[in-house]
Amino acid sequence: MPTNVWLITIDLKDTWQNFQALGLETSVEQIVTRIKGSGWRELTPYPDTFDELISNLAASETLDEFNSWWAEVYDLADDDRIWITTF
Image 1 (cartoon, rainbow, N blue to C red):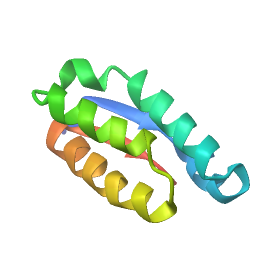
Image 2: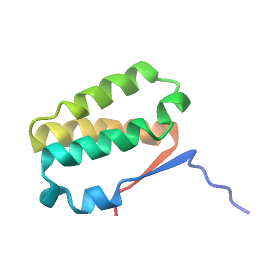
Image 3: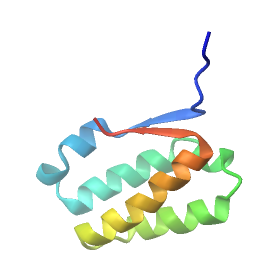
Image 4: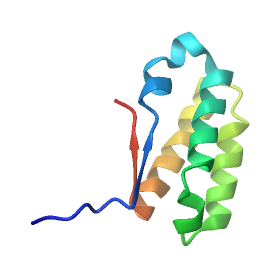
């Protein structure tokens, strides 16, 4: 019987699916709050990288900035075996 390879799941579906309606600032705030409250930082072997990426994600002022930092956050999540749901 297969076991779950993901250590934790961070559910961002509601924010992700309403990103445009919520606007960039609110969406980013909600996403960052959920990530910080998930317990991920305590699991990662790269806490300094986590802190830097989440700080930069939180400071995103444009959608392009957000997308750039999001790609890096998502890559770290894969490395750390963190599942982020967006759909």
